[in-house]
Length: 115
Image 1 (tube, rainbow, N blue to C red):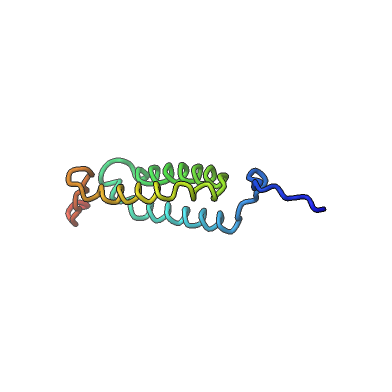
Image 2 (image 1 turned 30 degrees about the vertical axis):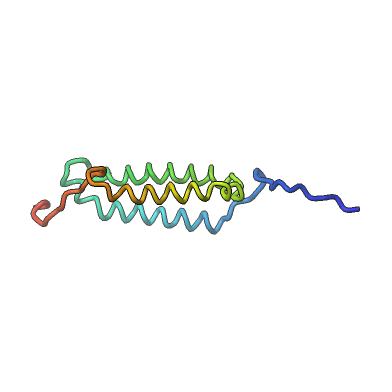
């Protein structure tokens, strides 16, 4: 008689997908480089230092990576219990952009700002 396998997946011993993690790190690095190349002159013109936007982007990237690794340890089958709540929460959050006065507007830049 055969023994039954345990129905619970082994979460701690599960290896991660090396190719996926490598692609995430490459795209993240390229994104930070693009933010640096696009925002360095404008942040110097604002007087906030050349790396102000890059520091914010890098901090957000680190927080996102930590959350990614924490969430990857959770079994994905648990999420099927919450799909309706997640769907309606995302719809409500998408509709909040239509509420006037709720967000922050950015000013337009013209060519004269940098001369």
